[in-house]
Amino acid sequence: MSSSQPLWIQNPLAIFTGNDQDARGGLVVLGSEIIELVAQGAIPKTPNYQVFDASEQVILPGLINVHHHFYQTLTRAYPPALNKRLFPWLKTLYPVWANLQQAQLEIASTLAMAELMLSGCTTASDHHYVFTDGLENAIDIQIAAAQKLGMRVHLTRGSMSLGVEQGGLPPQNTVQTEQVILDDSERLIKTYHQRQDGAMTRIALAPCSPFSVTEDLMVQSAAMAEQFDVRLHTHLAETEDENAFCLKMFGLRPLDYLQKVNWLSNRVWLAHGIHFNDAEVLRLGQAGVGISHCPSSNMVLASGICRGLELEASGCPVGIGVDGSASNDGSNMINEVRQALLIGRLRYQADEITHLDVLRWATQGSAGCLGRSDIGEIAVGKQADLALFKLDELRFSGAGDPLAALIMCGAQAVDRLMVAGQWRVVDGQLLGLDISALMANHSKSARSLIS
Image 1 (cartoon, helix red, strand yellow):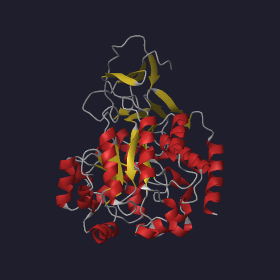
Image 2: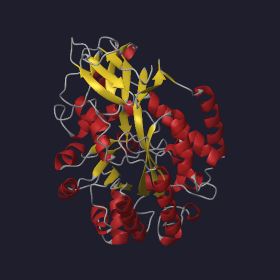
Image 3: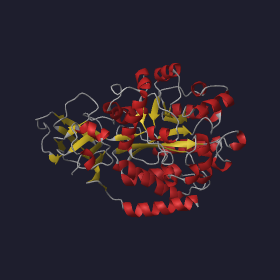
Image 4: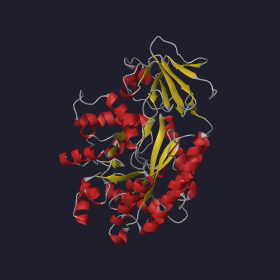
């Protein structure tokens, strides 16, 4: 496809635009943007277009993953960490992650993004907070990997400054001083953060959690985010143990602590956000704080169920994250959308949460968490980020509603993926990447890390 010639993605089997506009006749892409929606039975007004026949495909806006830990693909199903609650699980894995090397991070990040893209994800946020000796440029490594794949990323400069000697959970060799963290955060923002619509790389600041950083670092991170107009991210209210820890350490519930350190704002999105009471849900919504719902991870660690509908109704953007591959233990975004529906049905009635709700969370809601209005729906002027699925597997045979079938029947992989107007997956294959070689190198790296 020539980027200078319009492309009509024609007559899809079904399409989810995320809005009420009629695009049953498809859409027209020029460069990196959607320039026209085509009604059913119509043809484009845009002249001189090429045609891609989408009559066998269901089209979604590119899915947006708003919480991940790419490096954890190296510790999937790690035997010593199986069947543990969050804090013991972390204490088991922190010493392993402390040995992470540059080459391992590059391979792990590449594999995580490849897995995401093949599952319909066009934008991913990663929360990396392991900066041991030799890994000082971890975010630079991840950015280079994303650029090779052509994936849109929001990479968060994570941090841990409160080790076991100061009453935190992380080992001492995984923590950094506040000044080192803040200096590197400023460097990354100035070097890589793109502010324009269509940005492929953005940076956010992400102290790991209340139990792994100092109060001062939380305050200074909020001030830096305000100074440079970037977003803030952290884990919060994931388990009742965390609530108890915050009460013991700070004398405050997690949300009260968040307010104390100037984090209760629409610049913030939180991972998990499970254990909030009714009053806290309203406060979060009034502040416009985003929530990344991580259903698979929350089930694996028995953390609980995010109150997605109430948070959304209160005013919070609600998105979806696959979370780390040590607590999921995969990076499949379309599968995570299904998991969000199924776990939602344990909290809400079957007519209260539908496949359309979780698709909204994985697109518009996730875009809201990242503070973006240029992605997350199919509309004129939005980025041409698209996931196209075929229903040609046994799992879909006999399905009635094609859009519902994607979720209810358990879609796993895209047929095609477009990021910023460029095909990145064609016929189920990620272009420009030797998957077999990547898996071999990744498996070798995983064995090396845990040995």
